[in-house]
Image (tube, rainbow, N blue to C red):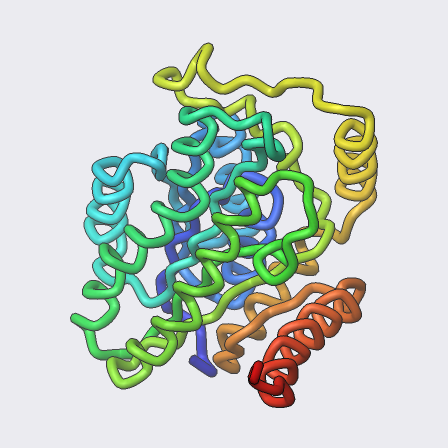
Length: 283
């Protein structure tokens, strides 16, 4: 999609952070953007801010962990703009904790927002993009934790691995249908991901707990919180995503910090194959 002007995009988690950065970059490129978020006050602020730049934007409130609300948001987008060319599955929450800190509610919330909403996004918006036969792009926000799972919130990592797998598989399936698929794997970005509990749906109230954990876990959380607070500007990430859409990048990274860790993972996988290749059968 080399020319984004006058195209329409639907962006989840668009009221702040990476979602707002992407919405801003697309609006600057002449894209009509429907911002979707669960956080009503922040969504209103984001909408007003973008409208002051003369961008053609609108907003719809939705809890994307509920398929019915995501469907209603899609219907509102079509009613407002007629077509959708770009879907950005960006909404995400941190949480779930490490081993020994899980609960069914924390799994259901994290899976619902981070993974199921992405699955439903493809299911709901894919046919809308196909329908107009003008081509399109679907970008889903995973994380560098979708490629290397090194402790911390295993629940979060599982969902992000799922987004990577979904994107890789559907890139092959949707290409003949005129839809490009990209997965965004950001590092530490300056967002509110560490305060995801502010948007906890009422149906999970009192069921999602965050135990303090052991000393190493507390230190990891403290480190991550500090890195996020001083992370990369979301507006820069938005520019990268815009470029990724224009050039149909399969993977969109924000920096090279974790490249050695990913190379180490690939090396460990390769060693597994080497062991089988050189293994001598027992006599």
